[in-house]
Length: 61
Image 1 (cartoon, rainbow, N blue to C red):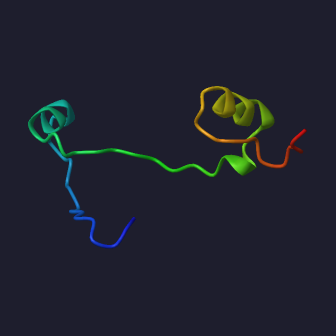
Image 2: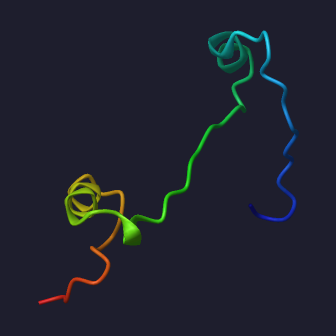
């Protein structure tokens, strides 16, 4: 996270998540995964989808 980003812990118990997203356009959900330790098939798919710029460990030709 970058300094200065306003983050607030949220208790999602008994909350309709779709309503939260609909009513709060600034709500973002994201996940970070280190693809370098994933199986090669997943790395190749991530590359094909444009999610990563290169396949880690593979020599460029």
